Length: 347
Ligand SMILES: *Cc1c(COP(=O)(O)O)cnc(C)c1O
Image (cartoon, rainbow, N blue to C red; front, side):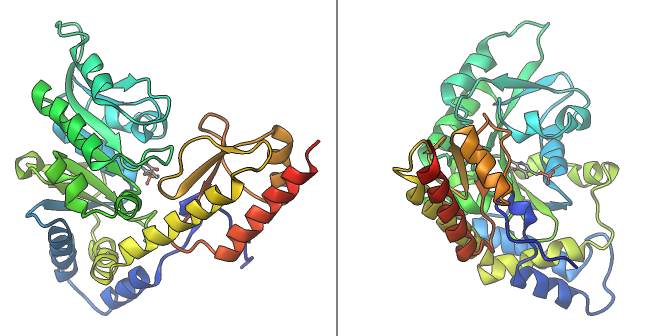
């Protein structure tokens, strides 16, 4: 197979981290019952309960779009609506799946220049209309960290959840990179979830170093009623569930979930520090997790591409560099060197 020089276009370019791989291998040892009736699934669920310090309901899905969509669908009736940021993955990158799986619950999009939802924006959307002609606001979803690489502080989540309680809204968290937020805040997972008023969390395993798989955690167990049927109907019930569950055992019991995230965040911090003072280059958003968005002259971005670097510019035109669990420090250095070269050569 052709080896591909490491890129930072997406954390999904990375492979599977050793603890997840080892657990898959261990799970491959023989026959066990199907559809989640196995010891790996129990052990992974318990590892989540231990990590979060609470007796939550745990489910496993193949990907984040399904996890988010099914979690939101369980919070809403079809005539309800879900408040989200304008750059939320559920709005921009899930092909209408949240609306589809909820049979029509509408996403109410708050204008959020930096990608972060605020209590005021939630209140404005939730109270703007209360008549029978408008879909009734029922849930709020926040992405932690945001699609722009920002991390909600504990206080910010508490403030949003206070407004949710006051207005009768449920709070969902898209945690596709949840581990990176925990690493950035150096807090316990509970502090930014159930203790701060989050009802449901989608905890991303794929971007954290697994092959595939996201966990859906219901801190309010009543909300999980019939969720297993919803997963099955949506084609998200893995028959060989142990292979979705076992990697979590490897990740959570070894602490790799957090080590991986710390390493990725450190690489982003390094790049952010290196561009300070580079002519024409600025970070489009504060660098708080594993993403760096660079605003730079077109010629420089073209120069990076000519030197073989891949990156996306789908959010506000800034070049996105996203670091994974296995980001190679030498490749980070190479990127920094190329940026310096191109900045020095600029007219
Ligand atoms: C990657 C990602 C997801 C999940 O995407 P899938 O491709 O469906 O696994 C969800 N939310 C955010 C913010 C993401 O970055």
